[in-house]
Length: 156
Image (cartoon, rainbow, N blue to C red; front, side, top):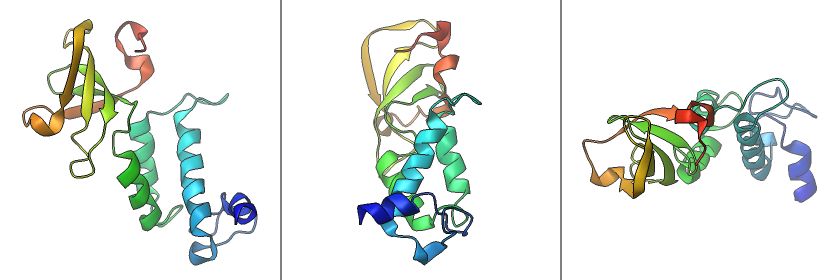
């Protein structure tokens, strides 16, 4: 199975992949999963020709490609496991605080658990504050934040 997965992981639902231009059901399910994970990994890491994209933006792009590059089923499985705001990504809340996602929720994908790292004024947050947004109905994520957008360019 592994040689087949390695061979097919660049194939796409619409037949525009390579090396054999396979379509939909012709592609092994495992190759579809590895292909999606490989694409996501390439998007969130810098390349010589472009900066890394935020995890949230990359997920939005992948969702937008459903049934074109990746099947709806494969994308749904990916989203169920990764969440809309993946663990390790940075987000800004409606109270202007910035935090790092430490856990996701399959039931409420827009309400992750956040470790607050910067207060609403852009200063490093005092102490250890972890907030489960499911338990705070007035708080919500307003934006994904890249490492470069963190206050004082501090990566935590």
